[in-house]
Length: 186
Image (cartoon, rainbow, N blue to C red; front, top):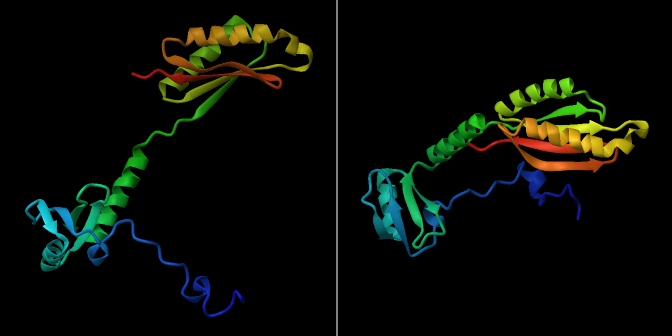
């Protein structure tokens, strides 16, 4: 078949129409529905009566809970309903804190003072709600000190036990030993 033919829906009228999220008006096929809304007495109505009430008010009958028995419908302006729903989702997304993972690097020979200094930085990251991924980088032959690196990471975790929990214990991957710390739940 030729992709440029007139019967190709993608070429003909632009992008295909998206199915509506909710069943509205005549598309609701249940014999009766539970009706809720501002200008309606809540209750169970035959679908025809519910649709007539919506038409009298110049609004739409929208199925908002299809899995309920009987399905729940609301008499509202469908476009306004979608707008409000999108606005609420956008607001929730804007207020959601994105958790970042901050990395802190050590070597097997990192001094105690440096560990303390980096622990203070990690404490600030955790208090901001971020996760901390501490790792010991082994270079060249320093891989023979992997026990020393593990002890260093465990000491680091012990220093932060007031504000953080160990999400992942030290794990060696190639020439790096990782440990992940997350903020404590309040």
